[in-house]
Image (cartoon, rainbow, N blue to C red; front, side, top):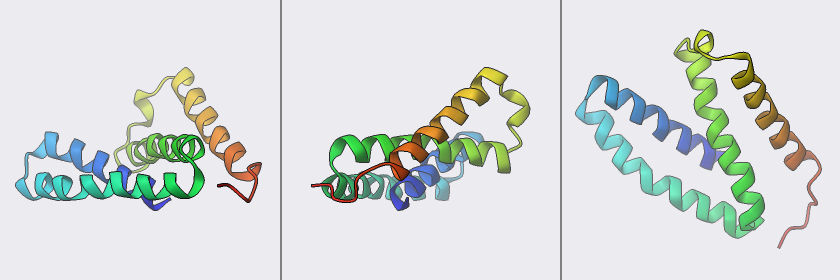
Length: 105
């Protein structure tokens, strides 16, 4: 979760920087970016690449979606098909989390 949260923050800061061009946002994003990759490496080493990638990358998609919908008011810009796809991604996270074995490498 922390890995996905770091990535969501980096994605959000990237969008804010392109909109506002504030130096502190750019510097924060540059400093945060290596932490995102290191966090993913940590998760991958503990859960295996396939599982870590599927969980983390799906959460990385869901995080910015929620930020866009909840904090930036972008719900009206999404079609029904796009919302369905986002719902399926959430269902995938639930399946990977709930039905995965406890002992992984």
